[in-house]
Image 1 (cartoon, helix red, strand yellow):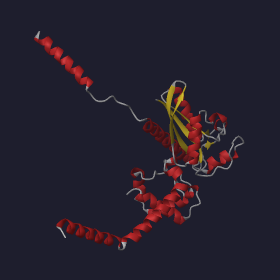
Image 2: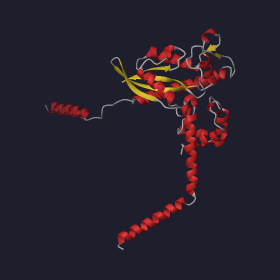
Image 3: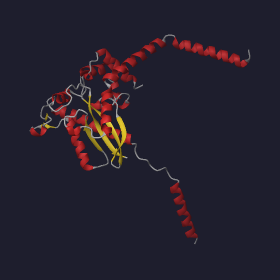
Image 4: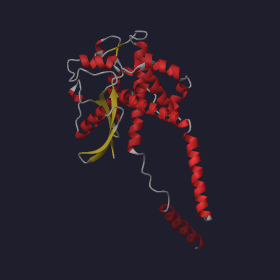
Length: 189
Length: 115
């Protein structure tokens, strides 16, 4: 009997303690989450540009040929923006926990134009405010998303000449250092 | 004059002396430096922020001690030379039309943000 009373008392205590425990975890702030994702993305993109394209391309040992139509060239390799896109597509096949895409209000490929009002607003904002990011929440279907838009900048003459000379480019006067588009990261809340 | 008023007068006079002492020679120099940094910040905002606020293409982020530490250790002249002629993935002058002198001001602004 005594043992039963002690056991019951311990059980009640455990229940009470669990009720008074630490506050429920809210998880990571969506902005911190998307900022962190973007940090990894830009680091990988920079490293691909610096350690592969620049080192092994025409400006380096010239053993690979970075080109928009890389598949048609024996030693062709993806342009940094294409490599970035390939990563986004691979993630899309892997998870729905987040998505990212490279978009522009002046896309060469119309598939890369903004599709939602918030994407458009975000891309316009980062183009008008160089160096700033855009954050917002949008509801698509029954799900509310945290949407972040980060600038994609013309960092070399290769970026500007490719876009300015491209027959499908709606804008042909890009300058070095100009915002050409944005990385849209979307996370369900 | 009661004690409280006397203490107030002495305190006020002492404060004035202190302020006067501070403004003697340091103030114009400090004001000039502040003005120079403000001009540099404006140059940064218009020409460099698009990459250096974000770390785009590896650009060291303004105020980021970790990124700037080893760079700052090289000294202003080396950083200016790199910025003017281009270095790594950074194009010459960051693709801007900034003069050497303006670039030096911006570099000094970056270093001021580490203090």
